[in-house]
Amino acid sequence: MKTTSKILLGLIVTVIGLGLLHLGLSRTRPEPDAGVPTGYRSELGGIAFATPEEGLYMKEIEREGTVNPLSIVLVENTPENVALLDGEGAEGREGPTSITVDVYENPDELPAEDWVQRDTNWTVANTSSTATTVSGQRGVTFSWSGLYEGKTVVVTKGTRAYVFAVTWMEAADRLLGDFDAILSSVSFE
Image: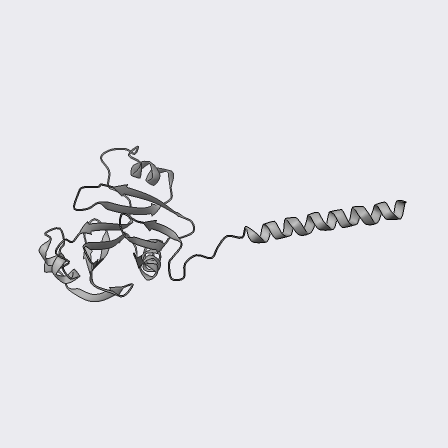
C-alpha cells in the first residue's frame, strides 16, 4: 500500500505541476507591437518613444484646447528637480537642464521649415539650421546659446508640429546622449 500511495501522490504532484506550468505559459505577456518603442506613449500627442531606464524624472503636462496641448519634460532625477517640476521648488531660480518634447497644433499642415519660420518663438531666422529626419519625417535642427547651450529639432506630421529640445552645461552632459536615444526611437502614431 505504501508504494501505491507514493505512486498516486507522485502522479497528483506531476498533474498539478503540469497544470501550473500550462497556466503560466498561457499567461505570458504578449510581445509588443513591432516598431513601437516601449517607454512613453501619448494618444493626445500621437507620439511614442523609448525612455532611459533610470536617472531621469519625466513630467507630462496636458493643456487641452491650446495650440500646445502637450509637453513632456525630462530632467535628472534629483529631489530638487522633482520638486521644481512638481511645483514645489524654491521660487526665483532657473530651471534645470532638460529634454523637452512639445506638441503643437499645425492646422495648415505646414512642413517643418515653414512652421518654424511662421512661429515667432523660434530663432531659426537668426541661426543656421540643417535638414534632418525623425522617424521618416522631414524637419529642421538648430543650435542656440543662452543661459544654457541648446539644440532643437522640429518635425511636422499632419496637423501636428513636434519640437524636441535639449539643454546642457557641458558637452559631456548625459542629457545629450539621452536626447539622441529618444530621437532615434520616436514613433508617430
